[in-house]
Image (tube, rainbow, N blue to C red; front, side, top):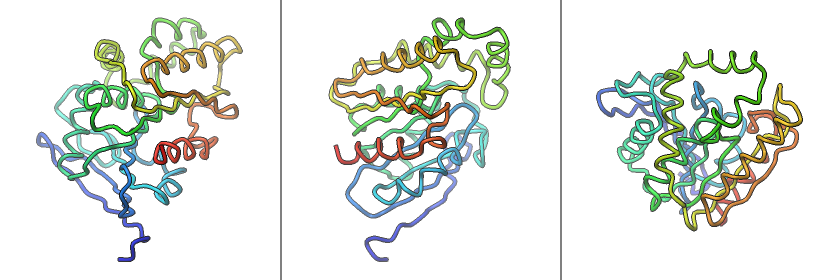
Length: 247
């Protein structure tokens, strides 16, 4: 195989009696592996719009969390702490050695922040893509319309319950530690669907507050993106990841 040829390896990794579907795009270079974690109810296909660009300059790992996509269900609770343990077990079993660049979208951002807290020595950088703030329920959700809140609460049927999702936010709030010199880029969607001007400003402000957990952090507002920045402005995400690789 030529040094510049990219290989795709798909595999089912068994942990705790169930199998997780994974994809590794490998470019045989001495670079950190980019580990991508999707939002609530999403799986690896959520990254399709950017993955072929990212794999030009990095080793890339994507996977389907338990019970989603091609992965089997887990007997463990669907909270971030359990998901982080499962991800760590999968990476270890595949012998994908750190350091990692963690990229998390929405709820996946909760997971990667918790992963970075649990295993800081494994992390070379973090990119948060419109990540869910820890105080979303208390501060943000009450500012939205009754219809929005009802629709939001009814969505929790694909991956864990509403209670487990909120437990995940509580876990992050409890476990979060200062990430010291781990670089972090926070991407905030600047054109959220169904948001008033005031709600949009609050959302951007709450994304900005996440910067406080790292000594090397930066906020980028994707002005023309709704929640899926990787679809609406893919090169905003690609550029953030590339900058982490080159950090």
